[in-house]
Length: 120
Picture 1 (tube, rainbow, N blue to C red):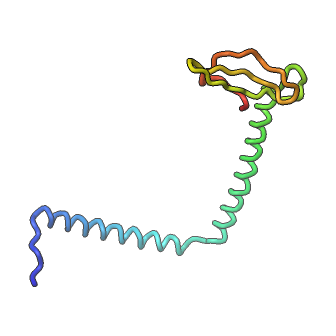
Picture 2 (picture 1 turned 90 degrees about the horizontal axis):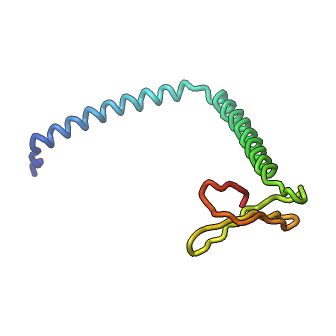
Picture 3 (picture 1 turned 45 degrees about the horizontal axis):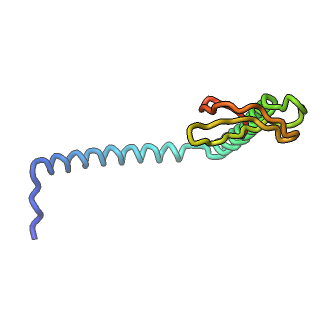
């Protein structure tokens, strides 16, 4: 059986793919050589130290953000509770008010927009 004949466009595509494959094989070989030269113990130590420092910073940042929100929405009546945002869906619009989770004090209702901030 003979090979099927290729058209001119198929030959060009085949040649281009052969060139690309050759280039990629060279890049893979170069990367493998670089990997062999690496000092794995040093890299492991760097990764561990970076993970440890990153997790502690994230926890501190999250905690401080949470504390800042709580301080911003402290109840003005009892100074112990947090004013939680309550959103009510009406047929025409959305309204909201804030209610203390400690004493039950609530603010007057207002129209809700996406700009309204608070703890839900």
